[in-house]
Length: 75
Image (cartoon, rainbow, N blue to C red; front, side, top):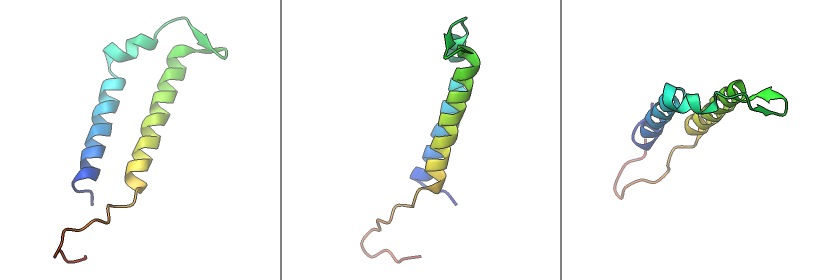
């Protein structure tokens, strides 16, 4: 299904999610600060989660590259 650049982007999104939701970076948001009356930690979790889902949707729903090499047959 995914080959080349699309597969690399999916792997990069997985790695970004793994890093963003792991201890060292996730602890940056753990404070008593409030944004619009909401605690920063859960707000940051949901925003990061939404950004990863939006990026995943962009990668999956994106049109495949239409460029072909000279002499390559169309599938």
